[in-house]
Amino acid sequence: MYEHDLLIVGAGLAGLRAGVEGVQKGLRTAVITKVHPVRSHSNAAQGGINAPLTDRGDEWEGHALDTIKGSDYLADQDAVEIMSSEAGDAVLELERMGVIFSRGDDGRLGTRRFGGQKVARTFFVGAITGSAMLHVLYEQALKHGLQVYEEWFVTSLIKEEGAVRGVIALDMKTGELHAIRAKAVLLAAGGAGRVFEPSTNALICTGDGLSLAWRAGAPLMDMEMIQYHPTTLARTGILLSEAARGEGAYLLNSDGERFMEKAAPDYMELASRDVVSRAEQVEINEGRGVDGNVLLDLRHLGRTFIEERLGYLQEVAVEFLGIDLAEQPVPIRPGMHYIMGGIKTNADGETEIPGLYAAGECANVSVHGANRLGANSLLDTIVFGRRAAKKSVEYVKSIGENGSDSEAHLKAEKERLQALLDRPKGARTAEIRNEMATGMTEGIGVFRDQNSMEGALAKVHEMRKKYDASIYVENKGKVFNTDLMFALELDFMLDCAEAVATGALMRKESRGAHFRTDMPDRDDENWLKHTLSYKSEEGVRTETLDVVVTKWEPVKRVY
Ligand SMILES: Cc1cc2nc3c(=O)[nH]c(=O)nc-3n(C[C@H](O)[C@H](O)[C@H](O)COP(=O)(O)OP(=O)(O)OC[C@H]3O[C@@H](n4cnc5c(N)ncnc54)[C@H](O)[C@@H]3O)c2cc1C
Image 1 (cartoon, rainbow, N blue to C red):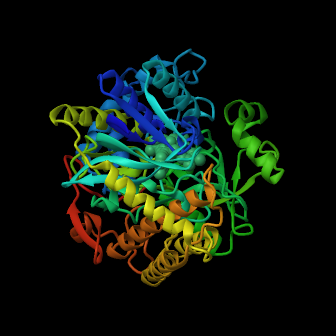
Image 2 (image 1 turned 90 degrees about the horizontal axis):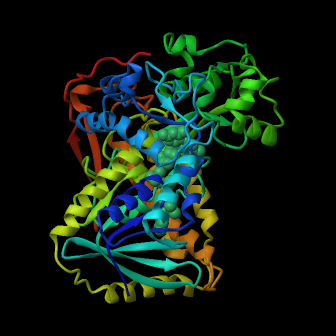
Image 3 (image 1 turned 60 degrees about the vertical axis):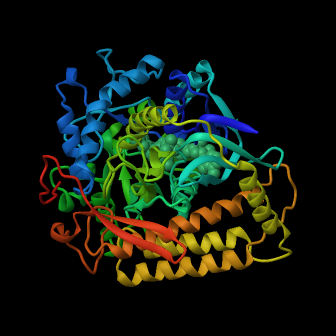
């Protein structure tokens, strides 16, 4: 039997930052991850991490206001204040741990300007910021002796007497299921991008953490807030980082116009992501696109600059479309990128369930509200990863032994998975997943309305029925049974899809990324509120919750 004080599900930036904290505080801490830690999606983050540094003449209040405006006033302002005021320390701490941030000619840490922000306060490592951070945190984890269950897949949480007391997980290498007891479980299991098709997210971003918490009774909050990133590569959906526009790239329509002049005369290409994505979609819908895309033009930046500062983007454009960014504009379009919604937590990572904590993309603190600013997610993972770990350490120290009957949970879970494997024929994972994910993109896209959202929810219900009645796992083997893992991930994704569509139908206004063509205005009177959904025996139960406003009263949002 396996046993820990603190068990963290996920070894991306949030999970590793939390893990290091747990070991440093002297707890028996472990992280569990379905892939090798440095293959977590955090590794793909390119552009950078925000921090207002006072020695630059920047103030945390400026970052907080930009974040709140970016969120279209849906973020809880007390949480944003914490994130902004702790940001400087958190980023400098990373630097001291060994993240070699890019520097300017003056030898000081370099910054670039990201969307929706008045000043340049995004720190970066070329175009591999997330990768550099993740590798350093992994080194720290090894140095501190953090135990890692690598390529172990969590299938369910152990919950007893209202509290979470561990997990059931599949060791992918042997195919054996195990119970792991823990006094506290911290979910840092990342986003749910693959609920949509296409998406910039890795194939492993299947919302497992969100669904695990939802099934355990924790509410998911503001799930309708899906970020479409303005620049994903035509035909592939691969992300071209906001760093391109941060360094001065333009957006053009088929007439060669910089159409952002109409939508955001002050900020132009560096308006908030929701604003830029909508402006692009309008050009495409009104016939000024190029085969369903618009153009991103970097030519004026020059070859040397592109290759030095944006080398990865050049590589992707050449490799996938044969386009040299120094010679030709590249076709791009809005693509699903990030989920602002997630497991409702307070600023200490606590959920409504004792023993269950969450941080990183799977959590909703809420600092991103209806639209996240670029480079605020990496910040969120390290600030709230650390805070959630601190709080869970206090909890672990306050409770006695973990007396959970984990063997009973293990037996039940073994039977559930065996039943899945025993089904002789039925529907394949890919079939259901594609239909669900394309249905979600159609119904809950950059623009949406009552009809489209109802269509998406009906599709999700249909796919859920089909899954429950007939999902079929062809591979009956034990060793690395990815066929089984994909089926279990799809089960999690269907939960997330249902919560997203439910939240979208609840919100009777347009705010941030949730733009309804049938209700195009923001309605602060009735909807300065979070949407909450709970999973229950009778289906999804919904509630709303007031947004916390400290000192920034909502005003009209213009860029
Ligand atoms: C292409 C791309 C570029 C981005 N660029 C930026 C950027 O420049 N700046 C920025 O601020 N943000 C960026 N983001 C967003 C940001 O990278 C993510 O939101 C953030 O890294 C998420 O970190 P995380 O620790 O929450 O989760 P992840 O890094 O996604 O890690 C999740 C972990 O959970 C584990 N896990 C999940 N399910 C299970 C399970 N069932 N059992 C066991 N383990 C499980 C996984 O193995 C993994 O270790 C980008 C995102 C993408 C997709």
